Every structure is written in structure tokens, then in C-alpha cells.
Length: 189
Image (cartoon, rainbow, N blue to C red; front, top):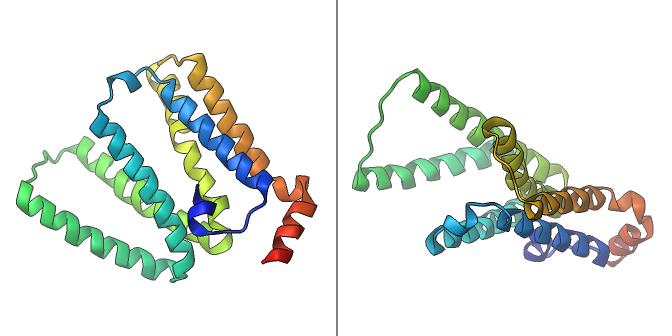
């Protein structure tokens, strides 16, 4: 969805592959057994989160701010917003070794590390090439669920995951597979 939001010029085969990957993503998520247990509010928040990530990726690409400065301002904004929320709603935690390990992992790897990687990739590649990486989050979750918890998945989820992987790999190599398409798109820019 990122090239549509970012208004990037992409060829029709690239757009078709991105839409195919998105279809695979929907199929993979719909094939999970917990979807029927989800509330409308939960699914709505998931849709809002997807839209926010897509728009945020596109906007971040256009802003062109240095990585370190961008991350600094994002974290200042987050501290102010979540600080206000915690002040109003309250917060409690039991500091123990599990909490410290989990918090360190979430802060350093999932938050800071992922942001640095995202901004670095955006500084080197079009938003559409970077945005397709987000398609893999549910797929990695399905794989992790299977190997860590022994969760079995429906054929629908596995087929959806395969569609995501294949369409994303072909999308990543499209310039090599169809060089005339990427040249034609570059000439129109």
C-alpha cells in the first residue's frame, strides 16, 4: 500500500505484486484460529495501526531528516504522549529479572533497533521496497507460534504466508526480472 500513499511511481507489475502480497497477508491472518475470537474493536485498531505504519513510512521517506535527529524527536514525542497517558490512567510494574529482560529487549531491539533499521532502509531505498518488509511481521509471528508454542495453522494461513513470501521476493527482484519496466518508470519520472 505504501507506493499508493507515498505517490511513488511504480510499474503495474510491481503494484500487482504488492496487492497480491497484501491479499496473501489478509489470507494468512484470516486463516488463524483466533480471528473469530477477535472483537470488532481489536480488528479496527489493527486496521488503524496498519494505516498509521503505511502513512508514517511514506511521510518519513519524504521528510528526509537525519536518522538520529528523527529518532530523537520521535522518542521525545512518545515520552510526552505516554507520560501524559500514564499520569491520567496510572501504571504499576513489579520490577524483577523477567521484567528487566523484557523491558530491555523491547526498548533496545524492538523499539530503537527497529526504528534505526527502518530509517536507515528509508534513506537508501524507495518507501515501497521498505514497506513490503511489514508484510512479514504476521508471517514471522505464525512461524514463531508454531516452533515456540507448537501451534498448528490452517492451510489458508500457510497458503497466505506462501503468497506473501513469493510475491515479496518477486517484487524485490522485479528490476532484474523486468528491466524494461523499471527503465520505463524511471523515464517517466
